[in-house]
Image 1: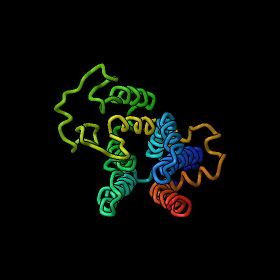
Image 2 (image 1 turned 180 degrees about the vertical axis):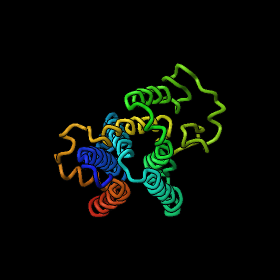
Image 3 (image 1 turned 90 degrees about the vertical axis):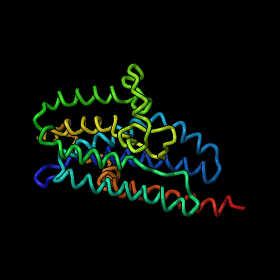
Length: 254
């Protein structure tokens, strides 16, 4: 954020909460898959219903921060680069170690990085649009495109041409063949519009017009994680995997 603006600590806390919730969720997956404990997989599956909440918090707060960033485009390339690093590890290095099946080709970091770059390029236009109108348009477009992955618009009311789904090269947009798989997948359609919703909402943050309580500290641990969210995201899965695998070697391997 710009040095001459009071930091909105609640944004850090919300982002930190979303990251920690995701870490807990992934922990149950590793417990189930590595330790063979069914209750881990059952809890992991049951928590799926809460995932949209965590996704929404993370993407909207990132959109808000795009209005507060010194250089949104530069930040976007850093995040996108981190996402491409994850692709290299999961799609190239891990299969060489006989650890395939977890390839990530366009996950949350790829999506957020691309959204930051697009928003940064469009920022002169975004600033000319009334924030309320922009948020309404973003919600409408998000709703219309939410079912692109199911070959339709408006939740099946408008079928899309099958010609759009004949190559995986357009998977970042939301159009892909039946053979496409990505362990973590966030297409630009519809998530770009959720990010833009945050960017329009961020106009009020840029003007210092957020409620007073948002500038106060509430849970310092959440704020710390939120301020370092990229590093926590990059490190959480290897750390969890290593910890669970150590438990497996000590207590479960015969």
